[in-house]
Image (tube, rainbow, N blue to C red):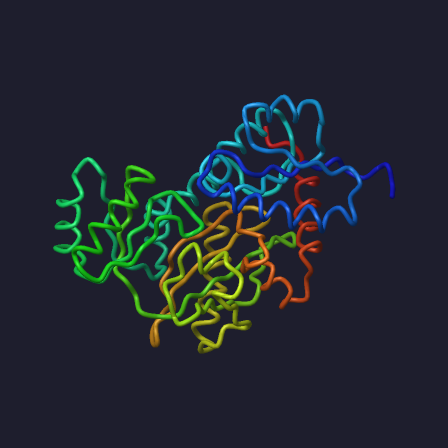
Length: 316
C-alpha cells in the first residue's frame, strides 16, 4: 500500500468502568482497518498516552473510548492541546452528551418528548432520595448514573426496596443519580453518520431474550438480545426517531457519529432517553448492524470518519 497513507492511532481502555467495552470495540475496528491501513497503532489510555502520541505523531486519532475520560471531553481536550486531528465530537459537545441530565435540559425547550425525571445527589441519603422519588414520580422508575454509559448501574424499580437498591448501586458509581418514570414501550435506537452532513441510519429495535431488562449482560452477551431492522414501528414514529436523532446530533454539535436512544410507546410520540457521542462498535453493538442494513460496512463508516477528521484538521 501507499506510503502516503495516514498514520492512525486508535485509543482504547482507560480507567473508565466502560474500558472493557472500549477494548472490544477497538479490537473489532483494528481488525477491519488493518486490511486497508498500514500505519495503524493501538494505544491504551493511560498516563503515558501523551508521550506515545508525541512519538507516533499521528495524522488522525480515533478515540474509541466510552465513558469518563474518553467520551466526556477529557481526551478531546488533550488532543486539541496537542494539535492532533481526531474522530468524533469536540470537548464541549462530548461533555454535554455525556451528561444525561444536562442533555435533557438543553433539549426540552425544543419540544422533544421526554420522560418525567428527577436528579438526586447522594448527600441527601438513599432513604430520603427514595421518598422524594416516590412522591414526585411514583413507581415504577428507572435509576441511572448521571454520566455513565453501556447500561452501567441502570436498573428498573417497581417497589421501594428495589428503588433503594437501585439508588445505592447508582451512587456507588457516581454522586448524582437520574431517576426517570418508566415508560412501557419498545427499545429503539438511531445512529447518525456524517457523510459529510448528518444522515440517520435505519431505525433499530432491541429485543431481549425472554423480554428481560436490557442490562449490561443482555447488551454485550451474544444471544441475549436481537436487533430488528428496520424497527417494526408505525411510519410516523419511525420518522420521528430519525428526524430527532439528526436534530439532536446537530443541536449538541456532535461530529462524525452518534447514537440516540428512544422508548416507543404503543401510541404517541417516542420518548427520548439519551445520546451517545461515541457508540459501541463491538460484535453485539447496534451501530454496525444499522450500518450494514444501510448498505455500509464498518470499514466504510470508519473511512467516512477518517476523511472528516483529516479534512477538519487540528481544532486548536
